[in-house]
Amino acid sequence: MKKIARIFAVVVVVALLSASSVWAGNDKRRGTAGAPELLINPWAGSTGWGGVDIANVRGLQSFYSNVAGLAFIAKNEVAYSNAMYLGGTSKLTGGASINAFGLGVRVFESGVLAVHVMSMGFGQIDVTTVGSPDGGNGTFSPSFMNINIAYSHSFTNSIHGGMNIKIITEQTADVNASGFAIDAGIQYVTGENDELKFGISLKNWAPAMSFGGPGLSRTTIDDAGNTVTLESRSAEMELPTCLNIGISYDFLFEQNDQKITLAGAFTSNAFLRDNFTFGAQYSLLNMFQVRCAYVYQTGLWSGENRATANMGICGGASVTVPLGKKSDKGSTPDLTVDYSYRHANPLRGTHTIGASLRF
Image (spheres, one colour):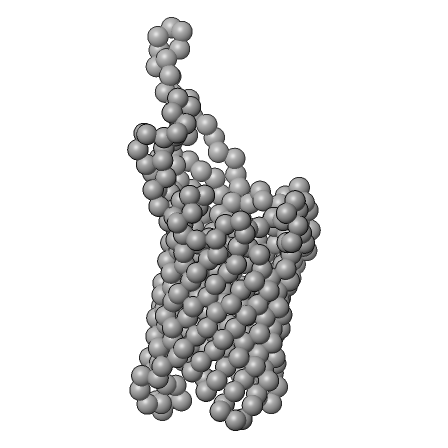
């Protein structure tokens, strides 16, 4: 127990020291990172309030916001989510869709082991060349995939921490790239009824990646009639490291077991503009939740200076259905269905729907 606590203490120190480099990002580096899919939240419940749940996220949806939240899985949890990214059928996005699957199991009294797979596809895209810029040469289908393995631990009733290792792959028919990254997070819960929560997470800390494959080579014939193969070397690309800091507070009402949660978060991106997120969620009988949020960054409402298609407005809802009686440990098997919408312009918004089963 003490050894594990020391390990997570080291992780937090490294995260805080790394924050100096994360915060030091400048405008010349904006948009130069690779693997941008690492900054796309695939989970319906979390995206309903813009990923503001750094401090209070629970269960498998913690894989994106703060891996420490996995420590709250009571026994077993399975989750799936599908997102039609930026409309899904837009010609500009090639039919982009995101599928996410997760499985979490409590392996120790205070520890949870979980896996998560996120796959992003873009549909069929026409192959174009210099001689035929309008296509007609067939199609290709790029794909991104991230495989995550995480462990989260509850050190006390108030302090929870986690670490996630992700394997990253990006590929087309003849070009691919692969690498790995590490996430780490801490959550602190306090108050008479655990109503006040703090969270911090460092995401996508990793070495640089680069592309390779036969698609980067070209075979030609020189003046002497010799066949020569020329290979282009891909420049290395850094991953989109970011630091998240969040806080939330629950206003509890005994009548009908109601709760209103207000949350705020700050995201410092090394290769993008920083985000400020504010969100609220209303819960009734622990069975129905409705949420909304606003994600702000500099230049968001300026057509000339805006750096994202997302317009900051998010909303969503969840319905939880009990599936059995409460166990001896106090947990009740249940099924939750989530939906969220993220507004975008000029592209269409992102619709996400998912479900999670706890048993």
